[in-house]
Image (cartoon, rainbow, N blue to C red):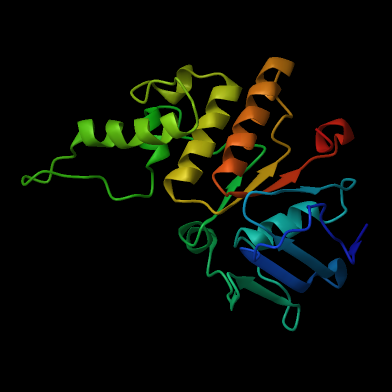
Amino acid sequence: MAVNEMSLKGQQSLKKPVLNMEGIGKTFSSVTVLNNVRIELYPGEVHALMGENGAGKSTFMKILAGIHTPDDNGGKIYLKGQPILWKDPTDARNKGISVIHQELNLSPNLTISENILMGSTFPRNGLGMVKWDKVHERAQEVLDSMGSNLNPRQLVSTLSVAQQQMVEIARALSFNAEVLIMDEPTASLTDKEIKKLFEIIDDLKKQGVAIVYISHRMEEIFK
């Protein structure tokens, strides 16, 4: 099922959008998956993306995250009003676009701190040794901003799925994410964990983060 004239649910705002996508199209082997997709993402708003399997949600998300590129003449992307096209996911992340995938992408044998700051430059002393106290301190600051009580020195392998998801969100925030894409974030969570996730989403809204919430669960979309 192709996406045609797809739009996302978000409240109207007088604020300027942090990101616009206009007329986005994507074709694979002559099969049109996205056709003329439009979206405006505003700071501090949650935009719900709904659709059946095969509707193009994943492809749209991958274009937004720099994994895929639109077709030639397949639309334009604007970041804070300036035209842009990501080189790759790292480029998108460095420009403030982060994704929390349904299948979490953490290194279980590393600490929470190492996972949060992975891809960043670790502080070092004059001998080139990593200043681990500074690394843990920086990770703690990010966790505190989310109201999390996780110990940054703890191994990720000891965490529950919900806790690992918190680490993924913390990693996005460590890169100063302005747009956070959450792909079916409650799929493996209990009711209690879902409630905590929604509390964190509410905090992220207050911090001005624009959130794309991908789900097929209608009851969640209207919470």
